[in-house]
Structure formats: structure tokens, C-alpha cells
Amino acid sequence: MSFVFAGLFTPFHYQFFNNGIIVATIAGALCGLLGVFVVLRGMSYIGHGLSHAVFGGAAASAVMNINYFVGAGVWGVASGVIIGRIARRRLIGADAAIGVVTTASFALGLALLNRYGQAKKSIEAVLFGSVLGVKTIDIVAVSAVAILSVVIVVALYRAFLFATFDPEVAQVSGVRVAWIEALLMGLLSLTILVTMRVIGTLLISALLVIPASVARMLTNSFARMLWISPIIGAVSAFTGMYLSYFLDTSASATIILTGTLMFIVVYAVTGLRGRTRISGLHHI
Amino acid sequence: MIGEVLVECAHMSCAYNSTLAIKKIDFTIRKGDFVGIVGPSGSGKTTLLKAILGSIVPVEGHVTKKPHLRMGYVPQVETVDWNFPVTVLEVVAMTRSSTGRLPRVTKDERADALLVLERLGLGGLENRHIRELSGGQQQRVFVARALFHRPELLVLDEPTSGVDVRTRHEVLHLLADLHDEGVSIILSTHDLNGLAAHLPRLVCLNSEIIADGSPVEVLTPEVLEQTFGAPMEVLIHGGMPVVVDGVGADIAERMSRFG
View (cartoon, rainbow over the protein chains, first blue to last red):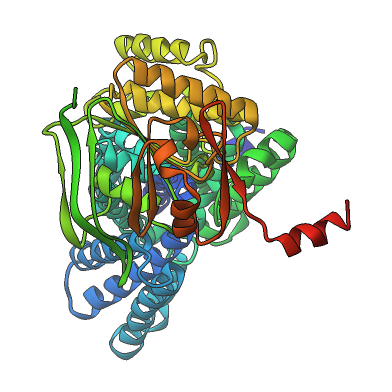
């Protein structure tokens, strides 16, 4: 019996796993927090596109031998701000514009890695995430972005709430909506940047959407969503990462599947009430 | 006595992309005004309100506002996301977002908000989700949010659009009370008989200002045809103009066959 119990702790004997699970858990909480704004503003597609845009920056910085966080960070934040502007101004069809900008960035990254990179291995690591490459700097980076996000969301809570609920009236009432949106897109870009190595480009948008959607089914309060969603994100990331060791599956895929399972359970348990609440979310 | 000027639009034109929505209008709102803007869909009513609020910048001319003018805006209820997770109290307290530093509504703000809600007949509903309210209550929540900002000028976009007769009466009485208390009001409306005819001042707009005056001066068949592009008749009932849709005789005759 004690042998089985001891076996449950086996993964924690490996430093790479400990690093990975710490980054994944903080990333889950962080994505859960920012995911609240993503789902309530109908920005799920932007989150998806942004992760593809950051991929371009990651590839370019690898090829040009620039530090990943610097190269992909500048690229990602710039893409985030541009996407935010496009979505807000609706100059041309926002979905089409975002699709073009982000997939072009993604394709450029892919082409750069094909031509100059270490080809398949690094592409797979960026697309699907990898716990093997997680270093102390990743823990520091994800923690720093998480702390920054919490501080900003708490300090500007009301402005964020007003600008999310009713941007036009918020603007008239003195809230600098364009600034708030740029800030949000910047945080979103940084989040994708620091979590991409573990979760991967293709699955990160799910981590932004699922915890917040589950939280929305559980509560009618914006303030409560802001702490329920990070908890769900952290729990699904921790559990998914842990299970992936025993199931010998991709960590990011297991994290997303764990989150999806939570979504299905909450959807079933909350019944009509939960479905009514979630029915108003855009683009889920 | 003529009140001080709160907002002055001089030769103002506004456009979306290259299409002019309003052209070279001259328009003034003074303290104590209660103005209704009427006109067909696409006539520039909402654009005019947004230019006054400052969310649209004129492409020609300018808008001058009294320094530090406090404005409250009540948008069309159709534009509100009723599924958004907020309570009545949170909606009302939102307008202090640019000054409120604490995430939670403070004790003083809560007391102020409850006073406004009580004043609008929404006492006891502060912790309800906004979707759980009736149409009239929902409209009043947004008026409460605007009033929480203690506005000198209240701007309302189609406040009676899509509401039933009882709610329309509630809104009209509420606005009349606020006006009596010194709040200047400008609103846009499609509702000629239910709302516009009751206001002291009406502006007929169709990209340009067609007429500006009291309902008796403005609601005439000529002005209405010029504004709406359709014939209308005006009857006087109890000293107030009543607009009757001038449906052509042939259509009336065709409809009567189904009666």
C-alpha cells in the first residue's frame, strides 16, 4: 500500500517535472484570470490568433539568435496591440484581418524554422509545448507576468469592468478605453509568451477560454469570476500535468482535456442555469 | 430667462468613413433645456448625441462644451449585453471608474448608489443580476448609472425604444421629474406621439436640422414630410399635436378589405 502511495509522488522526484508543473499551474491561473476578459469581450478568436502571431516572433528570435523573451515579446505585444486596434475600429472585417495578420505571422515562423531552424523538434515543441525545456527563467517569467497581471487587474478593476461591459459609455465617463484595451492585449501577449513553451501555440487559446467559461456557468458575478476562473485554470493545469506523467501523454493535451472534463461536468451539473449564462458568451 | 450654454455645435459635420451622417448643423443646448431629437432611421440622431458626448469627432466645424461639464449617457438598451455578469449595484457604481481606486464599491459609494436606486424606484434590487429585471427597471438602472455621475446634462439614446406603454410613461415621468430638479436633458426618439410631443423643445433632423422649436411649431405636416420623407397628418388634441401616419388612400382601401 505504502509502495503505491509512494509511487504517486514519483513524478516529483524529477526536477524537470517540478519545473513544468510549477509553470503549468501558474500559467493555468494566469490564463484563467485573463480568460475572463477574453470570453466576456468575445475575444476568443483573438487569443487564438495571438498565440499564432507570437509563434512567428519566437521563430524569428530563434533564427536571429535573439533572446526568446525579448524577440517574441516585442513581436507578440506589437501584434496584440495591432489586433486590438483592428478589432476595435472594425476597419475591415475584424475576423478576416486578424486571420490574415496572425496566420501570416505563424506561416512566417514556420518557414523560418524550416529554412534555418532545427526543424521538426523545435517546431513540435512550440506547437504543442514541452515540459522538458522548462528552466528556472520560465518560472521567474511566468510568475512575474502573473504578479503583474494581478496587480493591474486589481488596481484597474473598475476601469476594466466598465470598459469590458460598456466601452462607449466608459469612454464618455472618463475611462481611457483604448489604453485599457492596449494594456489587456499587452498582458495577453505576455501571458502567451511565457506559457507557450509548456502549453504550446495550438492549445493555449483553450486554456484562455475553458476556465473562464466554467467560471461563468458557476457565477453571475464578474468579481467572483475573476477568482473562480484562475482556480479552475490552476487545478486543471496541475491535474493535467500530473496525469500526463502516468498516462504518458502530452502535458498540454492532458491539461486541456482535464479542463474540458471540468467544463462538461459543470455544464451537466449547473443545468439550464449554467447553459443560460454561457449562452450569452460570444464566439465560444 | 435664457440659461447658460452647455453645448454648442457650430457648422458641425460628422461622417462615417466618407459618408456624411450630419451636415453643417448649428445647435445649442442651454441649462434647463429638455430637447428631443426626432428623425427617421439613419438621420444622424445617434451621431449627434455621440458628437455631443465626444465619442465622435466632427470632420467639420466644432463642438464647444461648458468647461468641466458633467454628462451622463444612457445608451439604447438594445446595445446592452444583458448576460454580462454584473449586479444592479455594480452597473450603477461603474461611472466612478475613473476616480474610484478600490476594486470594491466603498461604503460611501454604496450609500450614494442606494439613494439613487431608491429615488428611481429600484430600492432592494441592488444585488439582482441585470437580466432579472423588467424592461422598465432595466431602463431605469441605466438612468441611475448616468445620475450617479451627478450629470448637469443627461443624454439618452432612444429611451423608449422597444418598451411597453407603461414603461414609456414611467420613463417620461422620471425624465420630467429630473428636469424639474434642474437636470438638462437631450434625447433621441422615434416616438412622436408617446414621447416627442410631450417635450418642451423638439429638433427635426435628417442629416440637417429641418426645424427646431416647440412641438406645436415643429410637428407640422410640411416639416414632418421633409424630415421623414413620408406624408403625415397632424391633429390637435387637448392642445397637443398628434401625428397620424398619412397612409395613402389606396393602401387604406386595400387594408380595409381584410377588416
